[in-house]
Image (cartoon, rainbow, N blue to C red; front, top):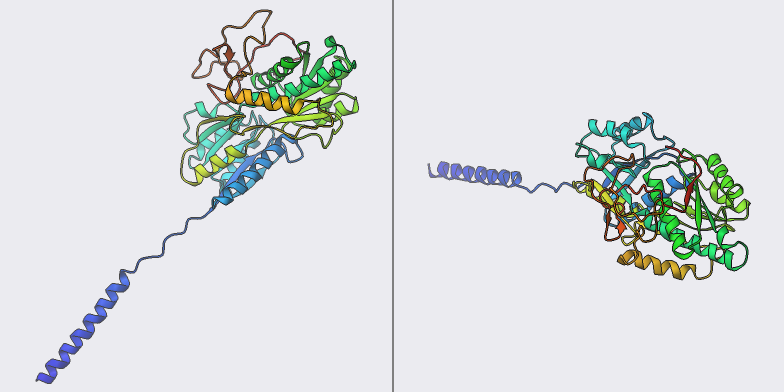
Length: 411
């Protein structure tokens, strides 16, 4: 009997140990879930890498990708090329990028935004950014944003370089003071372009007081032939000796070189195509913004609905100075003026430096690019200067100041 009891006790112990073993197995800590380090990013481009404008965006995307990689984030870009503004193909582009898994999509040109917003409304889980636009931060969607930079600061600096070149030509006897004529190829006659060419002109006037400027519009952001034709007309008919531009191609630069005058560009360094004409270019450096926005979405955050930074933050830049063409002392002067813009001692739209109809401007409202009041309309002139890109990222300076002649208009 004792033997039977001993056997039963042994069985109970074995079963108990087995049960304990099974319980221990159930309580084993599971392997931690590994977060996917890749985020798909889309960009709808008005043109393609052959255009200076789009090439500037793509270069910034590549630079931001390197920075993000250093943080353990892999940005996988998917591009849609050659889809112009004011076209429903932009909606399709955005929808296709969503289907391909993009979590944030940038639309890189003004005018694409209304079509981007159609896709944004149907895809609330994806962040959509209208670069250089102004409607997204004011809408009722939580997944849309606007972004731009204070490019007028770079335009002003570029104008200083142009003005110094005019001074050199005057000093050499190539032109007289009243022949210090600038030419400007513009896309459209609205605030973004007006703000830019006015800042450029004021920069030139700050060092060459006799400078005047003619502006010819082409009615397109990107039309290489018409941009060349406009530059030629400004040189041949209006006697411009320095050409600048707010358009997407390098043809104003090559036209300037072919006609023996000088050039200041936009978006990219144009000295490769016009080494004897192009002095430098101003540009928006989108690297900082792309890094910020992508990292924010990757981490589950919300992107600033209306982002704008400038020269002080490294979001506005100049391409390398072409010392072979630039006037002596240009590099030093640009450094001095840039420091003044950064510390606030130089204000680009200082109302003591321009007039409208012969009168000093003492009041002006911040209007959007269609000439309508912005949602937070404020008096734009404060402390003796027009405050550009303060009440929204997109430019709203639209005053037609004295000294600038518009050859035509294009809305």
